[in-house]
Each structure stands twice: as C-alpha cells, then as structure tokens.
Image (tube, rainbow, N blue to C red; front, side):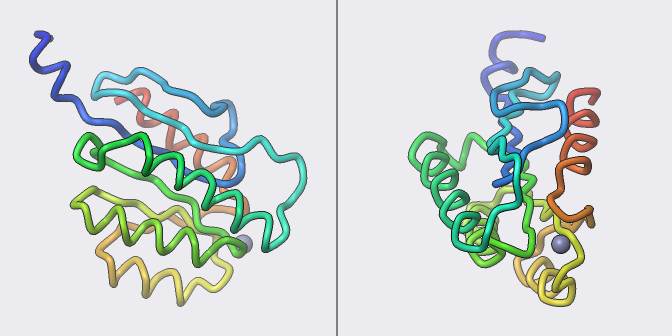
Length: 144
Ligand SMILES: [Zn+2]
C-alpha cells in the first residue's frame, strides 16, 4: 500500500462508558486505518448520573481531538443508563456523514429502534453492558 493511500485511511471509533472485552482504551492498527477504543474500565455497574457524566466526558474528549471528517465508522454503545447522552452523541456524529452503528441492549428497545431509524444508523443488539458484543465487533474489525 502506498503512502498516499495510508494517509487517506479513516478511523473507526468504538465508544462506550463500559469496557470492551479484551480491548482496553487505546488505538489499534487495522488494514483499513486506525481503530480507536474509548471506554471505561468500570468494575461495577454505573448509576444513571455516573454513566451520563462518564459518557459526556468521553464524548467531550473525542469532539475536542478528532475531526469528524477523519472518521469512517462509529460503533456506539447505548445502554439503559446514559441512553439520552449516547443517542444525542450518535445523532451529532451521524449528522457529519459518518456511518454509525448503535450497539444497544434491548432495554427500551422500541425507543432505540425508532431512534436508529430516525438517524439512519444500523443497530446491533447486545447484552446489557455491551462488553462481549463490542469485543466481538473489535475482533471482526481487526480481522478485516
Ligand atoms: Zn439493558
């Protein structure tokens, strides 16, 4: 692959206020550009306020550092807690023309399904917390 093509490679973001099985926060190299995991290594389930605050912290850091034009795909976990923050963040990224996939547990599934349709995002159902499903998604992206 030539240098020019390398420079044009866009990033894949995996965003969750929980953790991702086997893949701590960091940047991973794939054949189609960097894959960046934004997560939090929590050992207990977040309460509503904590989760919301944690996610807005993560999203704030991303918006400050990453140009949406450099992003190709985004996988965002939307759980029961921090649901509104996660959905708003998804909407913002989707508005920038990025391919967003909502990874969601089926708590309040009707609402999440409607929102995914509304912003034109794909939806992958996961267990509560999304830790295993996100781990599988990252494995698949790294293998592509
Ligand atoms: Zn759930």
